[in-house]
Length: 219
Ligand SMILES: N[C@@H](CCC(=O)N[C@@H](CS)C(=O)NCC(=O)O)C(=O)O
Image 1 (cartoon, rainbow, N blue to C red):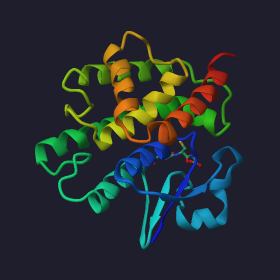
Image 2 (image 1 turned 90 degrees about the horizontal axis):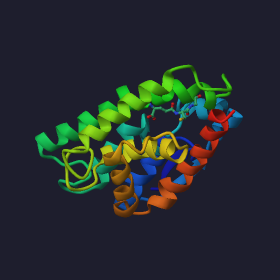
Image 3 (image 1 turned 90 degrees about the vertical axis):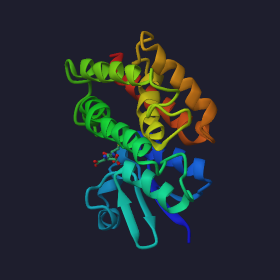
């Protein structure tokens, strides 16, 4: 049975899901929800996801939102035994989980404090000082990337890279990642080369996000 994905490409959380799906060879039945037009508030969508955000995945009787839960579900269900995207070794998995939580609780949280009001049209320019907190989180990420080629200290891509690259590539496309973060810059290039279907899953959407962000920052 086809898996439905309700998505909007500007959203990094939809692009991370597409990166994991590409890596696993999963083709979704794609259902666009234009959050700029408020389509997430339609009653049919609220019946699926009362939290009215994207992405939402429907795989038979499994209905999930929260992008990072979708990433790990897809690998656990469709990735086969000990898939390197979300390895079963408890020590490696713990590092992957740690980076997913860093994304959710720190980088994404700070990113969202800047961009949520802009994306939903609640404000027309970024809140004062909020980008400094994003910059601080990018500095930590730069440090984490001294531990290995990818964010969990592995030599290969994991779902933590999918989650983080979707956010960071959008900031980069907007010109908001300082060139002093050399490890981040090199990792971004590595991701474009080593993630299957990167351009379709994330590249174009990240640039669309970058154009949107530039329009709000360069007033
Ligand atoms: N923590 C959630 C965040 C999802 C989220 O907030 N998505 C935004 C788009 S970037 C959205 O759909 N906002 C519309 C709304 O909240 O009404 C995830 O990772 O999936």
